Length: 130
Length: 351
Image (cartoon, rainbow over all chains, first blue to last red; front, side):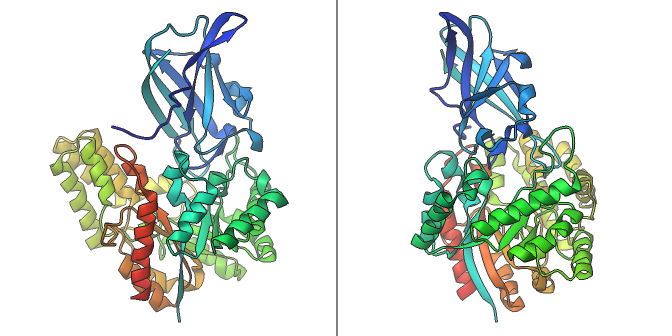
């Protein structure tokens, strides 16, 4: 089925630092209808080509500031919300990044709006090229 | 004599906003084009860096300039009491009251005199904010969204508080999703796209029709909303219906349809008349309006008729929610849907 454009098609790339590939990144939008503080984004999981990345290797960036999943739990600043309709960048720290060519990603997000009796858990998948 | 005005909740345009086709001003422009004179806003949806811009004169000047340009009046501010903003605790009562007061103040700064709060708002948070609401001339409206309903044990709890405090600054905001004569067509289409079986869909449709004919069992007041909701579902025959769907070989698509059917309900429009003294704003929830201006689930003519009889003085604010089903498999055209819905309401109000 078609659906919302959750991922930024231009957002998949390896991260180069000091001439080395230290990981890869992608950009996606929150599957919810308003902007939220990062403190209620209670989990992100990234699975590429069937392999789930360790949570400690993930970094989440909005508006130029980068947080670990653990740090996100206390981020309530107005300047660093996951705004409705805006991409956040998820970086995965992994030596060598991804090999050039086609890959498949499943990106899970768990958002817990205070009024909902149950958390919102969504997984979006797509193929992409490096 | 009634004075029923039309408004649009910008929530309706969320798919266009999400895709970058409309910004806040674009949504106001589209609202004005429909003939609506009111606008309802979810600040956290369309004002980035919430709530900082609202504190600035620059943003407020822009906001009021837009309202003037598009001839719109602020009808309702939709607040989200984020009382579980931290994962390890719920905010204390004092913290929650302060958050509610902040939202009342923000609403007032943008010219709103009504504020929507969600059913999860604890009673004592509302009570603790009433004096401030009076001072700021903002009424707090508790959204009555399916599976909740007026004239229920749940609503009685709030009614008791209204009478005990004598407040004029708290009441109900009915969501017209509580007046669904059948399950919205867009949900059925989504289930079909996902591979649902016609036989299973019919079991669910029939069960809905039976609940409607018998009268829905009302939800009880309980701070544990998950528990209250599950009891409500069981009391309305969810277990038997799910078993019937399973027996007919239902898969994930059929189960999705069966489970989601409990997010719609039918109340008698008489409930509006009985409670009119406590209703000052209304979410005119809708799912799909056909080319000839018929809502496929919500009983617009009957409900508008009840508002007329009751002498309602307030807005019916279009709240389009069909997109959440359509977007999984096809294009969403909220702009056209809101246009049709406004026309359907105009016909009912003026007819």
